[in-house]
Image 1: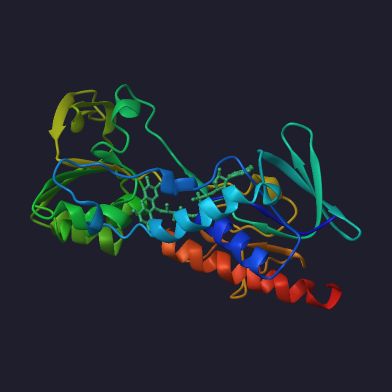
Image 2: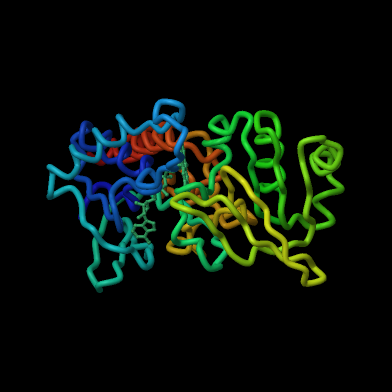
Length: 301
Ligand SMILES: Cc1cc2nc3c(=O)[nH]c(=O)nc-3n(C[C@H](O)[C@H](O)[C@H](O)COP(=O)(O)OP(=O)(O)OC[C@H]3O[C@@H](n4cnc5c(N)ncnc54)[C@H](O)[C@@H]3O)c2cc1C
């Protein structure tokens, strides 16, 4: 039985693994990939790498250290987790089973997609998901945000503070009545296309046009230097659903020591109720979860 199993090899899981190794814990990281969402990076003709805070130096350092320690990681997909009298069993998709006295869940989120022609061709080439990360690259640019909820409104508002113009496509009527919705409706550099749907993404090397359809079925073209799909993030928490407490959006509830409501199960990064999806926040969460798990395990080491 391992001391600790970490599920997820993004910034949170990688950091937790390196901390656990430093603490000489018998640790295993199980993940579908190493690097997680940091494997995505927005490419734009005018933007330089240094303009975005990516935290890649630290993530890549931890990733190569773990790649070297072959005994400390398994490239598998986890299907579910079972509570045992003395710990937990982690069941992988290929039928393998691993046991540990404590777990850290760092399985991140997945982005909701549009599912329209052209989307796949331009992902991260002008068509992006995180205005929170990339808004500073759009000073004086034409931008578009797609989404019906609060995340789309926040993204449009953030872009409106720097961009020349923002077209917000698809917000619902209710969200436009919130204080942020009212502010956006009054903003001079924001055009709102309520209830519209995206039909296709077009471009030439980089995405530069969205084909949209009005609720009445009329098609029109929205040109932009960059466009953000802000349909929301889905927490990859299904592996512990029914075992640990989740919030209404499916994120794992944690306290300020990365503890869930189940003793021995810790969680870190975007899959949790921790504030804001950013690499450096996930790195910090991962460090905290590993130290907290170490405290939990210490009496038995
Ligand atoms: C397109 C995009 C661009 C971004 N750009 C930036 C940026 O420039 N700067 C910034 O600070 N933040 C950026 N972010 C946000 C940042 O990437 C995330 O906040 C961060 O990666 C979260 O780290 P994490 O470890 O919690 O989760 P993730 O990075 O999502 O990692 C989760 C890991 O868990 C694994 N996993 C999931 N389910 C399972 C399972 N069932 N079994 C096994 N493994 C599993 C995945 O394979 C992955 O390795 C961006 C996000 C997106 C979507």
